[in-house]
Amino acid sequence: MSGGSVYNFLHKRKGFFKLPTLLKVAIDISKGMSYLHQNNIIHRDLKTANLLMDEHEVVKVADFGVARVQAETGVMTAETGTYRWMAPEGRRPTIPKDTHPKLAELLEKCWQQDPTLRPDFDKILEILQQIAKEVGDGGEDKNKDKSISGFFSSLRRGHH
Image 1 (cartoon, rainbow, N blue to C red):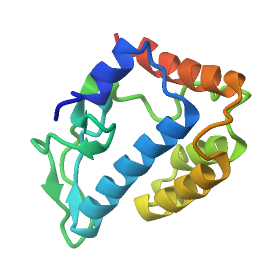
Image 2 (cartoon, rainbow, N blue to C red; image 1 turned 90 degrees about the vertical axis):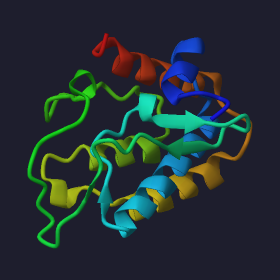
Image 3 (tube, helix red, strand yellow; image 1 turned 45 degrees about the horizontal axis):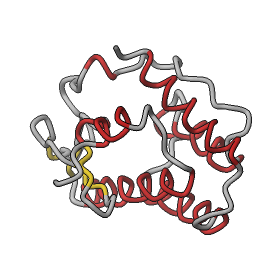
């Protein structure tokens, strides 16, 4: 896509998305992942390098090289993904204190140790859309913008 990967976009902007844009990107990703899961496709390598952005900043999930159709049992046989981006369970970046409270709560839910307690992409999408509605397109507190930038920076630091 003409905008390249989200990985490249973030590096050009030094890991910076304003909160409304971050929510839009997260909503686009959640829609794509929800569609895949509804069709029993497990991506297995979701990362910023595999998210493509067009000239309107619409994000699409890409690179299905290690994707698999989920068996009826729901069990996947081999661990896969890009190991540089795989964090050990329980090792997560610190959520900045001035992150939108509902966004911080969503991150914590997604990081539950027990996968059965994590929300599915339909639920994530619902929560993100609710937050986006509350936040609107503008009126962002500059501190919140910095916190999101800091959050992405902490994600990047561990992977270079």
